[in-house]
Amino acid sequence: MKRKILFVHETFGRMAGAEQNILVTAPHLAAEFDLECLYWNRSGKDEASFEKLFPVHHAVDFEGPPDETRERVATVLRQSAPDLVYVHKCISNPVLEALTNWGGPLVRMEHDHDIYCMRSYKYSPWTRRICTRKAGACCLFPCLAFLKRDRSRGRFGVRWVGYRRQMRCIELNRRFTAMFVVTNYMREELLRQGFASERIHIFPPIPAPAGQAFTSTFSEVNRIVFAGQIIRGKGLDALLRALARCRQPFRLTVLGSGSHQPACEQLARKLGLADRVEFPGFVPFEQLAGYYREATMVAVPSLWPEPIATIGLEVLRYGLPVVGFDAGGIRDWLRDGETGYLIPWNDLDTMAEKIDHLLAHKDVARRLGEQGREFVNREYAFEPYLERMIRTFHQLIAAP
Image 1: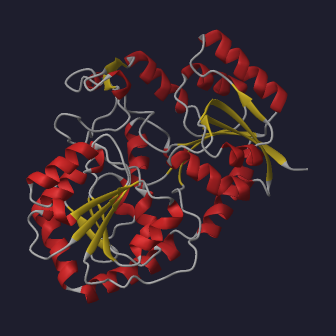
Image 2: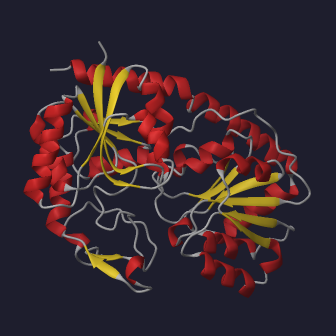
Image 3: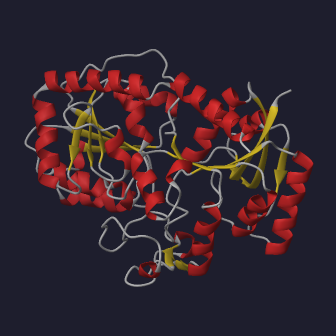
């Protein structure tokens, strides 16, 4: 008889990286386990895929009255009777309290910095410096992390974040049987917060195997691709400032959208780059390859500490080198001189120098791209990743 896993996640349907990870892994887990899902909100996007993966699902208001939320979660646990609970995005303390009171094996896949950062992005919105402190009094001063930006309330909108609530969230997550993180950087962050090292496992969100492999033409267009959300932490403005220092001709294609796009478009005009930067907007996943086929490189100029930046793993499979800042977990896959160039954080001169070098020496770009493809196919192979995850789940279920 199959064992049962209850997924716990804020969103039912496609939204961002966490949901993509569920959609990629759950079909394979379903061959080994019965799956159910406890969720809060529906995304309105690709919900049919979630319905297929989780024919039995339970809606609970994560932010309802605490006693009512705890009781509803406890009721789901009694009805579902899972052998293991697998939590993805959830920072609702009443939900976490009900889960830790349940007594069975709890696993958390930590996709980002929600547990240990009150702002959730682990860097200062004013200085853009990456935070290296343990969560505590420093979150109140000098960080002022109890003020979190809320764009739904206007350009300068903010909302309050409870300090005691955040500390309680850390305490509850320390009780989990196992914590899955995506990079060594995140493992170090959990260790900094006092999590037991033997409970931390690294499971990067490996993309599903790509379709037919191809090699870019590395065309004379000298195309550089930026793909992702256009928000301040992603550093598109820093990339534009670096490109303004480049001597080689280029064309930057920005695939994505976001709140920082108008500012970046204005900056491109100010720097005299408007005729060399294009903003096609959001491009469906299946159309991305068309841009990659003639690209010379992909830029990942993130200034916030990326948990991993899965776009890097995706483009390495296409044999494209990456240039990116050393921010967060990027260094796990961006090996300097092997899969591309890892640039010191926000070092615009070095970024410009390395971009110029790859544009002027396509043979180097091809070599780094092929090395990157070999690296990611070896170190981030999909089948061994799933086998190790399934094996770990069975071990946790069987443990006392």
